[in-house]
Image (cartoon, rainbow, N blue to C red):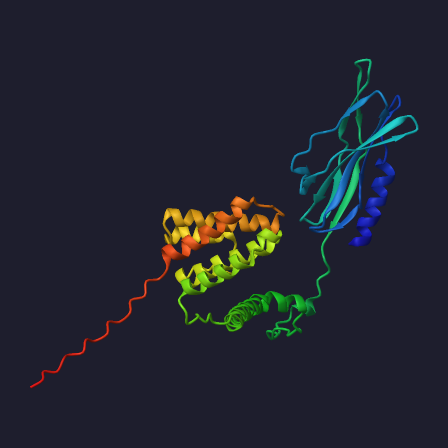
Length: 328
């Protein structure tokens, strides 16, 4: 059958292969192959060679080229310039699901010239053969159902199958490790911070003694301003911490002021005194500020007044009165 189709093809091509030429324009139809397997896809195209100043109108093809030959896809135009002319090519993808021999008849193509002249050209006829597969009758014998083929698991398949579970396990382990590390770090911090040991003496006794000692050294009178305010600031901070549990020794002046306001530790007068002492001390220690003698005397007096006005009242237990024995 195939040989017969080939001979027929050669014969038809010899007697029918031609295209019209009018002036400088010509058109031609072509196929990828003239023999295709049933259901296969091949390309059918019409090419027009026209002058540079001319245009062309191709036939409008819908879903069928000829009977039993279907158009699957309409492809875009392709233009090539060659030897002072332009070649415009219009392709389509076609197929057929019926075996046999088919003739694609000539199609009309309009060439439009610049002088408002239009020529109608015809494409050459084409032959196309569609053949089926050779069927081996022995292959149709009924056979047992084959077992599924077991293939080794690839890396990509492994990831798709188990990646989510492994990811969840890693996430849980990371979370557990983070919590363990955090609590261990917090425990180390607690162990590293020594417990505050409160002195046996009342806070005001210690503060007044240290203020007397600072006053006796007369540091600011010797231009040791920074040292004077460093000691004064520590005395006030220590008194606030021991007397009112204000976290003053390790925090900034701003934090101490805010803490006292929030907890209403001091009245307005004493709060202003603490604020004045600590802020001038910070300026003297860190900003190279040189307070006036009045500032030095005032802040020292403020410290005395703070301690005296807020000192803890110690109530001594009453001594039992001795009863007089009646003399008989």
